[in-house]
Image (tube, rainbow, N blue to C red; front, side):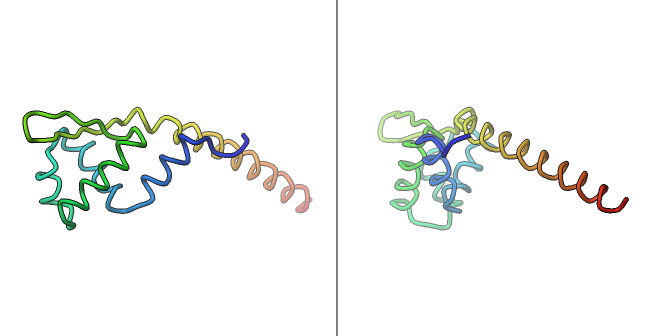
Length: 110
């Protein structure tokens, strides 16, 4: 696998921030919520929540729905697929490395 794609990079950058991660997790667990509802549990100001949601939206991790003056957000868990693919690649990579190390150690013990 060559370097990370732009999509993977955007996902990692978005989820690197603990507040954005918490917002995404809350939406994934609790379903669609308003900015105000998210702000009540975020521990940061409403403008900060809105800024974080914009970043998550740019990364494809959340979708926005407008109804009158309210904005509703929902998680898009399928957007995590590129990260899952990245992790599968490295899981296989490290599993292969560990298997070779185990073989080497077994040969050294003989």
